[in-house]
Length: 71
Image 1 (tube, rainbow, N blue to C red):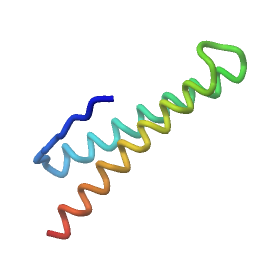
Image 2 (image 1 turned 90 degrees about the vertical axis):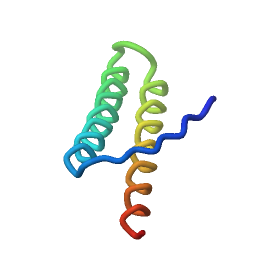
Image 3 (image 1 turned 45 degrees about the horizontal axis):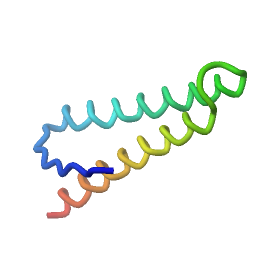
Image 4 (image 1 turned 90 degrees about the horizontal axis):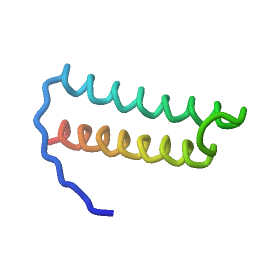
């Protein structure tokens, strides 16, 4: 997978919007995983892996923000 390097300067509101959007996106995938258990849509494993990927991204964003605050 190709990697992208992002260097963003965000206001507090923009940062909150970004983290909220990532949380909502992750939760959407979790909901789809639950629905897949009932036989709807794609396989549960796919949705769970997508939720994990978004959670990892959210973790990276939060970690980067904490590092920036310590500077």
